[in-house]
Length: 503
Image (cartoon, rainbow, N blue to C red):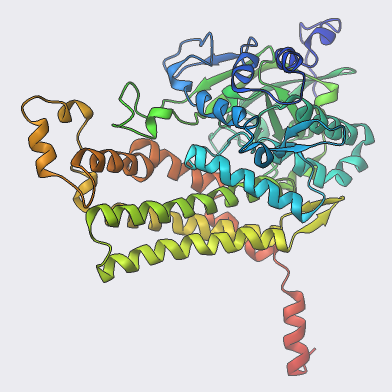
């Protein structure tokens, strides 16, 4: 393999290691393993380089309007300390200290159920609009743990690195997000020849140096680490086969944000969801980025390229579980729509609400069944991957139909909406209030509610979320192939053959 040089000297490695000093500072101040919202924000002021969609360097990611989602994430961090929600979002470790529930290694089905309940709460806080909320980041690292026998076979030291990273993240209340996808590029160029292909350009005793690019990494600008795995097919050389953890503030790492879709600078009543911001994706560019050895989990191992299904078992279950709780929320939205419009007694409307309810109940059944029929991999309880895959396929194939039904239930109400300034107009505000009341609610409250529904299923932000869900849960055609190839039908086939009496 070709190895290039870098200007970083070996002496610099010690200063570069554990680039989480800001987190450690904040934890030392609180004396525990949890970061409050303010401490979490302070930990993000760590020298990371983020470029806005307008090409400007963002000096402080916690104050930039495009990244106002940080306030939602910080509120969830604060909820870890609230007596009413502490037991949902945290667990008590062997040392008696509380840690974020996402980083608990699931040894029992009860542990999985606890993670599910945390997802329920967090989905309620984000209205399901964030695909990478606080509890999601641990899922990829747990997937590494559940396949650690493959890593152990490659290098026992790398396997220990995975265990240490999970411990470190739990001890420091870290937020992570995964990196898998490559930039969409000219497919006539072989994958390992593309300039964007992330690859090792130098291998040193104290770590590796990588260059190239990745995309998505949603919420990465507001996280502490990326967890990287090269999967999803071949076509790459051993230099591109990397599993690792990468501090977001690593020198040479640049995040270029996409254009926001959520409305800005509008009163909350005009855009109840968009007002809170959105989860921004980015292109992540690596210019000779050094990854300390203790964050390297695998390198040059082409055998791991096929482990997407296995290493992402927790991540994909988290996606499906969040969609299940989002579907449950859709049933509430549907009910309120029909009550405000006074259409809840119309049989056709009731049939549509029943269909939305069936979607939610089916996903709930999948979510619970994956835990009830969990499997053990390397000492961890893993939500049943076969059922998770089937649930994901059901969720994403039906998602467009369900969101269409919600829009359809609204009728004119999604079109006949006005900003707050219209309702405050001295001449026409009162007349609008007279013309547009709902059933049992004022015209203004009705307007605010349908502004919420617009943000949820009809606006630009909602459109982005719909596109994201389709890719995030993996495109249906690929998932359908997984349902075929990864579901064991041999026992059922054997019973049929035995009953009929054929070999």
